[in-house]
Image (cartoon, rainbow, N blue to C red):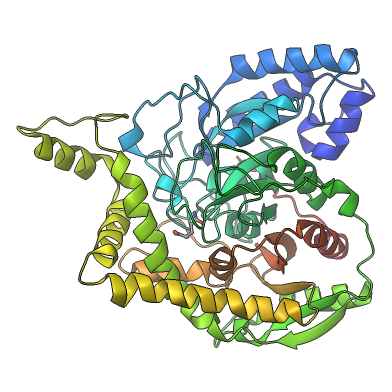
Amino acid sequence: MTDLTSLTLAEARSGLANKNFTSLELTDAHLVAIEAARALNAFVLETPDQARAMARAADAKILKAQGGPLAGIPLGIKDLFATKDVRTTACSKILGNFVPTYESTITSQLWRDGAVLLGKLNNDEFAMGSSNETSCFGPVVNPWRRKGSNVGAAASGQIEGAHLVPGGSSGGSASAVAALLCMGATATDTGGSIRQPAAFTATVGMKPTYGRCSRWGVVAFASSLDQAGPIARTVRDAAILMRSMAGHDPKDTTSVDRPVPDYEAAIGKSVKAMKIGIPKEYRLDGMPDEIEKLWRDGAAWLKAAGAELVEISLPHTKYALPAYYIVAPAEASSNLARYDSVRYGLRVPGRSIGEMYEHTRGEGFGAEVRRRVMIGTYVLSAGYYDAYYLRAQKVRTLIKRDFEEVFARGVNAILTPATPSAAFGIGEKGGADPIEMYLNDIFTVTVNMAGLPGIAVPAGKDAQGLPLGLQLIGRPFDEETLFSLGEVIEQAAGRFTPPRWW
Ligand code: GLN
């Protein structure tokens, strides 16, 4: 039998329906792969017993032709999603061994549709980061290596310097999907955390329109920017997962009540006469030639498929990153106030309640999270609120307007590079200067600031043999167009799988 882990989700779905194999066999193949890939540190919790029980239940349903759209498909879940009776930590020491008594809306929809839980995936602490290095469980290793690199699998938990990051914050999701440890994964994106790791690992990542997927039961980072979505191996697989993840949820007041389309039907749809915007402000000084070339290739592929390319201007782009690093920390500092050592996880005692808070938060939060809480508290404080927070919100409105004007002129989607570079080495960036790390999201944060959908699709490789991705940005609630265009790029660029070395 072929290695079941190398199938796409869509292929596995037909294999299961045709009874070529069972979900238990498919699940077991993934559990074996996960065990053999512990050096990647992608999973922070494996749930083999639960996985097999869910697989058996799915098999029984498939046999009676009652399986849902994801019946028997094994998935990984970012550790930011609350899973009932299964430890959920946001990869922060402060949540300790927190075991939720409830299930996030998104994961409950996945189980409703028959999916199987393989375990919880590593991420940057509270989703703050671009490299998965801020996780309290340690960094995730990218299954991609630079050309000629023969760094091997280190002993469990010990990561050699020459390994690459998978991006972040959804680094575990991206690494696990790329390394064939799960057929797809949930992820979240506040400033780029679905799209940037997808680009670093040659996977497909869809960040839906704000309000498309419920945030209920997803650990909050910056509530007005956070949005969950899938990371998958193909555009079609991402579309299949999106259909189960999306939908209105009365428990999330920002969730939008609109019907969920059959996203898969968008795959293969003609993109003829679609107008694709190329924003001139995304052409950065000093951008590597490889990224420029990738962008030109992407434009040429879309043109060959019948789309029309137009140059556009998004004049406020340069303010997006600074404004994001005011809005996101402000909301984070407020959201993270709930970790008071009384209601959840870790408690470090003190002589007074104030001291207990201080000790717990000082020990429980990592350095990046503490930095964000301090920035956030500062920009929200009485004397600085107008100068920073209010101003950043105004800039946000201008960024949103830039996009609205472009879409009003008939542009259907915008094509940009997903990241300014390929994956970098663990420990290589952001040590002395956090801004170096923040710059990773230069092409992705604008999308969150405007609440728009964005997809990252693998599109090529750099001279070192590392994957690079393109991003497509869409009109609000028009994820379908992004799936159609994304598939054109996928067809032209081909698919990329890292050779197995771990
Ligand atoms: N890298 C960005 C940050 O650190 C975005 C993270 C995310 O999207 N969750 O805030």
